Image (cartoon, rainbow, N blue to C red; front, side, top):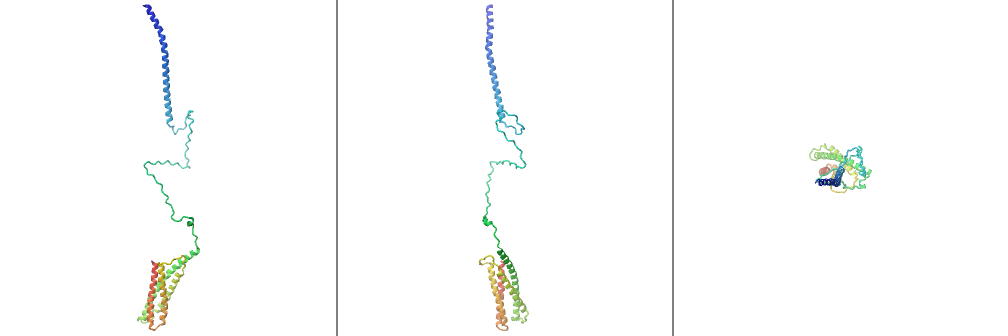
Length: 278
């Protein structure tokens, strides 16, 4: 019994180092695997941190950037922001248009000239001194013609009135006093002179522009004044003939014709002046 107990003890002592020798390599293998797993975790954490740093942009207001590693030095250098100069115009911000805003159509150029804008049309016309003098002379003479015509019409009216009074005094039972004869003679001379001067101002005024013959107020004025001219000449002739037939029976007929032509002449002068009024 004792032998068997000693043998068992020896066997147990010999078996302990063998199991310890087999357990040591297992422990070292476990230690190695734990170390490799920890190193892999550390590398994954470091890669995540570096990816986060690269995705976030650097701050704009940093005074000086720290030294970059050799891998980031290959990036191109950014231009430094320069403060705007007071002489340079400030850049306008870009206008953003909403998507539903109506599109503004460009206005068409409506600035065009209907008339001839060539060099010949724009060139100033040469002034003709002779033409300018003729226009000024015509304007002056026609102004005098108008004033003298008004005076002539007033004098002719007075001549007709005094002539009618003289006719009544001598041939219609007025007593033949002869009180109107001198007044009538003076008014005849004055009205005849004004009539001749008025007509000469109209006829002798220059005509710088060629005018075609047509029926207008000027033409009608000339027609009526031509009739008045014929009446004035007839009045002068009849007056002289009537004076030569003093005391004869034919004198009354001549006086009646003189009276009718006088009123017709006054009517023609009035119609001629009326044509220039309208």
